[in-house]
Image (cartoon, rainbow, N blue to C red; front, side, top):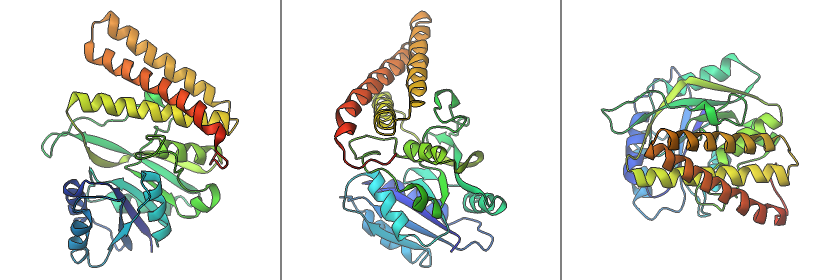
Length: 297
């Protein structure tokens, strides 16, 4: 099989319908694919929704249940259940364009050394509003590869045998809050496997317009980033991470200063919540990672 698409989901059955609908119009040009929905212990009607779509997809859709809470555990369950030579990930709040699968498979077909790619995305507030491409490279810690990208990334399956699976301590639903994708991408670079950023391979990501929710997500992401960095500093003895910590703090403090100077209230809130979350992640990581027996680095 050419490619397995893994969608991890938790209590978003209505949003999941939109994601699955977008796969019905995929132009695959003879590509042999499967879609695996990993239900991470949902309490809504996720199972029923997926079962209803199985016949529509002519058995190209499979349902996997993962009881252990956490997105990394769900990702790993999907990988283990997959049959494709390429493993692609997207999320249950994403709309994929018609050429998404074929663009990914062609990228790997034309570059045999390629082991991983991270795609771009466009944020959408609803189906009629499509703002500009949303990829902020200013906060990257992995060269010119954007942090994360978990809703649009793909790997050769053999990569997981080489560097391990996703870290169960990281990602939504875990102690580490998020950064499971950033951690995995960081390890790919650390092991000198070929990784590219392919902004032309896009997905449409549905965003939440509520400001309070946005601030909480910024705080969560910054907290996870700090937690992830401390892992590689303390357990991986990777002192290059220090540059990432200093760079992140410098950038956010700069944004805070500019927002105070220019009296930009929203930007000031963003910088404060990010700094708060990042510091929390650093401290909690220092209290957690030294006491773990086995750590993926």
